[in-house]
Amino acid sequence: MKDLKVIFMGTPDFCVPILKALSEKCNVIAVVTQPDKEVGRKKEISYSPIKKTAIGLGIKVLQPVKIKEEYKEIIDLNPDIIITCAYGQIVPEVILNYPKYGCINVHASLLPKLRGGAPIHKAIIYGYDVTGITIMYMDKGMDTGDMISKKEVKIEDNDTAETLHDKLQKISVTLLLETLPKIISGTNKREKQDDNCATYAYNISRQEEHVDFNKTSKEVFNQIRGLNSWPGAYAVLDDKNIKLWLSKISENHYDAKPGTIVNLDKNGMEIVTKDGSVLITELQLPGKRKTNIKDFINGVKKEDYLDKRFR
Image (cartoon, rainbow, N blue to C red; front, side):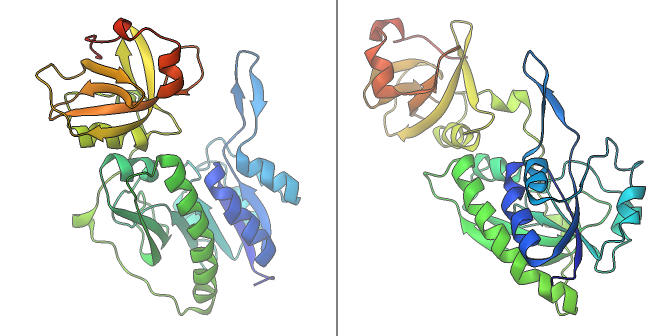
């Protein structure tokens, strides 16, 4: 496939191993990624992980602000195939219909489940037992195109969004490299999605980061680990946002309102939920670094927290 002219479209860290693998196997003629961002108080320019990687590999980088309007340079490169992964913009039909072998997408779920921009987080938050990678043809819908190949990954109770991200990142490369020759030879499968089975994983909102202890222990547990390590779950105590990074489900039950702190020791900060309680084992106070519960209790007074209630 060394002569295969590929344009790769992507933005976050998840895509980096894919681009590296493609650059070794194919002729990657350009990378399309989101425009640079200004970050911090000094408004320093920040490159996307994919742009940094492309520059290191000596690959041409294109950064249209609105790809629906700024696509001519992409078309003029005459790619044989366009491969996308977490690019971040809707690709117009004029691009989708152009390459000889089409436009394919690497999506981090088992479609039609979890269409959208946050499938890794939502797989955990929604309590899925398995997820995976789907290689699919792109169409004008959001992750609605025909499926080509899939690979499953089991979601363990100790998985966070970060660990699941790493598992899926690894298999995405393997599955793409297995599937690409079949697409080129025309021997690949093509399966339509059942829209009746579709679920959605829209980007995480600020509201979804807030932990409501009126939910079940399992729901709270899944929400906290599903937002670790980004953007992080939080709850409000004494009008301060406390980040909650890791938790465990407790078997204890208490006659107290959900959100109440009923115990604080080396095992965790125990908080009442709708149907029991959870133990927070890693947290972060405003302006401080995240800390495990054993270190946290060494620096605080237990009575300052007991019987207070998160909201």
